[in-house]
Length: 354
Image (cartoon, rainbow, N blue to C red; front, top):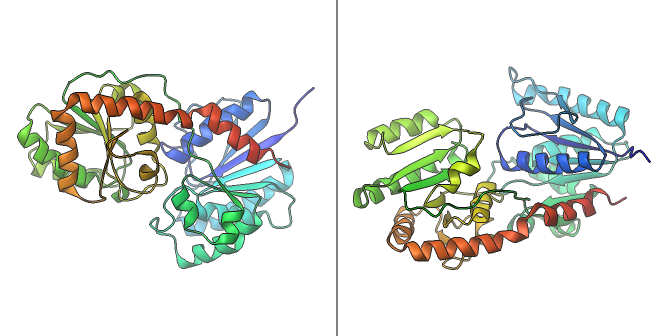
């Protein structure tokens, strides 16, 4: 019997990022289940993840225009799509997009699941967006949060209509466990990730341990500023910014340890992937990280923005390799809860509920 069920994912882009990786995993899963799968992109039509070529990608993006000026195009494009295709399930990502999708679907019978992807108190959303989510979220089919913290940022009515589903994580490579002097970070070159803190801390660490280098994978608006900082600190041949690469897991697995210095997160995919590989991990105690790392047991947590504590944690791993490896092993055990099979089942329970 032919499966005529349809699912559509609506988000900003399919560039490198946590939400985008989640969509790639779930979309491919539903295609394998013989569903018709569409992905609607609002900010960029470029796809940087492996998506089955038979999955249709529909771009409503016009990167030459401001986001505000594109809202009518998004609204009418989404509404037209919903009327014509009548998907069985809609999954949208990020507060502003969730609002647009919900409004575009007014009067159309639909099963709409919306997902919050960041720290709701730190991601720069306006008062208007906060008011809109408070009105809209109780009326959608389900609101998905990645962490208990993000869920707690909303009122009781929304919490009752919500569920926590962390990111599915899939890596097929393990930590090499080599002492090669490589420290690695992965994250967009944006203020949220606070790579400046990491570079400043690394400078102090390198002054004590000259064999170490720092590699920060990712791309973003702060590239030039970070390059200038690296030059001013005389770290040109020690701190590298290779951008986005296709074999990121292979490169991360070669590091001695992984560092995340974000000021805030939803739930960091790069951290979860490093943990699943068995890398010793250091993270700021931002939302998400503090729900998966128990400091001193399966990683080290340092206060957000605290350079001295970050330096101490990095030195601890360098001086006590056996301790670092033990925490890496425990991190790998922790990561079992994020295996795709476990997480996909939770998404199925939400997306396929009539």
